Length: 311
Ligand code: RIB
Image (cartoon, rainbow, N blue to C red):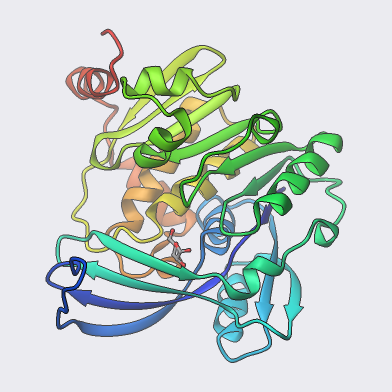
């Protein structure tokens, strides 16, 4: 069983030809709201695509934005532990998605900043606690410490990017980052492999967009080339990767297999609009994976070269 503690946001999404530069106004189209927030996206991915019983601790305001967030978690089968906050609005995110599927996101955390150490229930029966950085860092650290004390593996998706102190890193079993987050954490100009080696966590996974992903676990490097898809919206793809990776690890799968499943789920999420709305079901994921050949030697060589690993 997986426990996710973190953020839930209502995403206000507009599509546009390109993401505005500072000071620029662009005319967009197709405005919609979607359930989002890194924590809630990851919980939905663990339950829906990963097929693993999943609980989530989240904080919501006492307002109309909360209802669609609760409904989406419920529809995915996530068991909710909700802290209701009366003096803060439910978290929101303002997202511009460009026609080449990239996005720019500004989060107004609101109620997400109200999560406190005392809100975490006992974790008996859970294999992994999955955390992100859209809630207060002291709370993240307290949850990681509580999980470590209870023998629950701690997985941190260090997003949005920020530097982390060594006390917090020492509580993490698996760290998941994208390339920008890796650079912030490693504070190093060298190769991806070198950056992964500089982070004092036993297992570090970096997602590399269209290149794939790379993990350094207990000194061993693993790579997974990306599955080619036609992307329309990358929002939530990283969260889908995190939720499915942790669900697979919770099912006792080997890291190599977990990376393959997480990459495929993330790829599928890029082919649909929105965050939670883009996360595939377990059946869709299995069907997609069944159609994918094993990585060709040239693909593996390409990602190893990209990461600075000697082939
Ligand atoms: O990772 C994507 C998510 O980031 C969005 O759903 C948005 O709410 C922000 O939290």
